Image 1 (cartoon, rainbow, N blue to C red):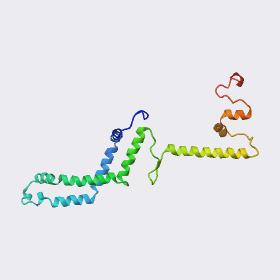
Image 2: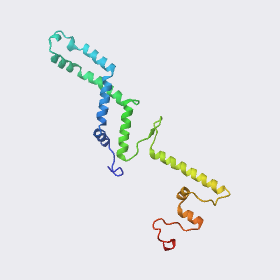
Image 3: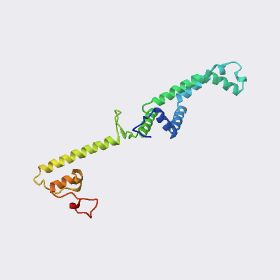
Image 4: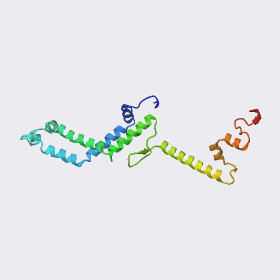
Length: 196
């Protein structure tokens, strides 16, 4: 996908999450956390114990299938409502599964859009990407190089030989103009500098 010309939609992110198995993995985590939710279990058991179906005279004479169908009809909506609330609590939990979901969505969006995902999330929610860290390193290198050059200019022996890295940073032509020698030609060493 060309990140420069197309807009990444929520559907694109969702499709990617579905295709790479992330949605299935999240579904499994949610189901396991619901199964482990003792409060939800206890509420469901209490609802079944207090159901009209089981507490009606003659309920013991019904078949298991009849009881199950009647219980389902009576309790399905309220039990699903409680389960739905529990699922939403899990999804919106900013310290648990909700945080994990947000990070996955952000990672997929970043990948699809060609951006780098955040490398180090900070406590206040600000993140630094690899590019930001590299830019910061480059700024520091530039400041260090400028400081080194100031020190050298102020030193009594400012006409010292330059190191290879200084030549690369300052440019070969600048070095040639200082020394008076023409720049070296690396492409074809068979030609002399005068033939160029």
